[in-house]
Length: 194
Image (cartoon, rainbow, N blue to C red):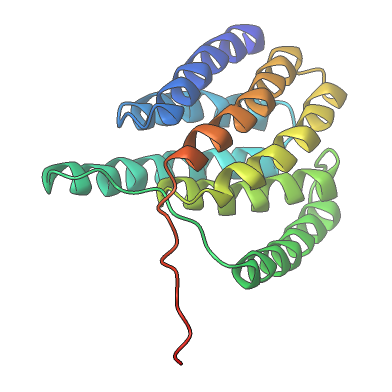
């Protein structure tokens, strides 16, 4: 049963990634369906933080769909943008604090597998997913790191297809980054007053 769930989730995940890079709104439908399947699989394998993450993916998928659709209704595509190094720092600090809190909870109160690593990939995936829905270039930078770490997490739990999927995600995180970077809104040059 787990293998069939894993195959379905992997196929839906690949469809999601393909359409996300292309900035097609249909990506969110594939993401939502794949996430629903993944919730059950991760719960069954004891990766509780991952189950929570995939519940969040369903919610962010709904948000992303309507956020992108709002732009399409206005006859314009949501532009790709980025933010300052200071904002990166705030997000990393916030992510680290939340990761440690979640990890502590699962370490003390459950039989979770690798709670600290699982919590970190989960919390930072929350952040990256939200940034993705906002079409922030930073989302791909976060995904590169998250996917690299998640490969190890899945391999340790013998989730072989998810490990392969995440390896593909890692490669395509670089593709997505460079594709979106080409379309990044140019920064407005500020000229100093004389």
